[in-house]
Length: 362
Image (cartoon, rainbow, N blue to C red):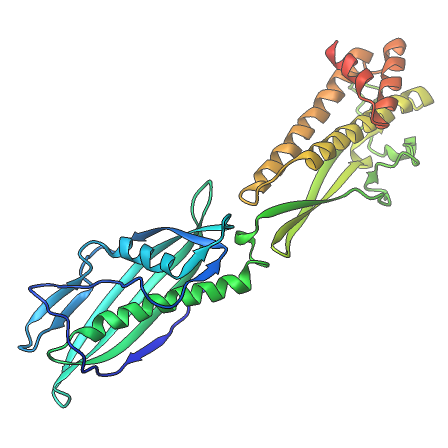
């Protein structure tokens, strides 16, 4: 976001700033009364290539470079912080980066003086644990006129530009802190895991709707040694919104099987139970993922990466459960092991993971 302001400083008859070969400028931190704010300025970076902001003329029309003696960043930091009284635990730590500060003057014979224009361009950034986050830019210019033997309006114009930059940022922050994601201080998860209607293409997990062989519509793999195969999986999707300065991340959990990638050769109740338990294990992996999500403390910066890690961990756990289940039951052939897993899975679906954990330890 950019803004262009125009400040016009009239001719001044006050005593001018005496200059030598260079005109050394200074930002004066003393100004308006400080206001209590929930932020602080931690750093100002002068990213300009040239220290000189341009040239000014003396009464003999000699040119003199104008600069801040290499102290623009230091003076700007003091200037900004003099405008505020920071609360005890400020919510935001800020960095300002000065992109450009440029001065141009031209002699006006009819006025026997000079007209000048100063342009300021800078950016405000939010500091945190990682890289600084860009918030907003400020671009403005000030025009002034001055007698040939006086320099006051050069410094006064620059002072006004920096004053305007702070006022602009402060006004921007007051309108953004409740709706701008970069300024959010908290993350709240809204996890949705509703019952979903199934279709011929997708069967969503529902304990009240067990699988039937009609859900296995793919043609059997005749060369496979397996009697049946089920394709079950879990997924998450969602979106984030900002509510009263808080990121609300909605996550929809889906546990499903795909009939078109699931098949059976010899259909009977025993085999159906074995495949149902595969589906149950996918549900258990999803339940454990939800538990981890609900217990997480998330920071607004890069919280999506943590959510993605939790999902990938759940996906790997799902695959591990399926592999160990088939390995121990010999794909359902070992009826004693199958019975043990039936009981452990039923308990795990009710929240008791002890029996399943013991089987995994084996």
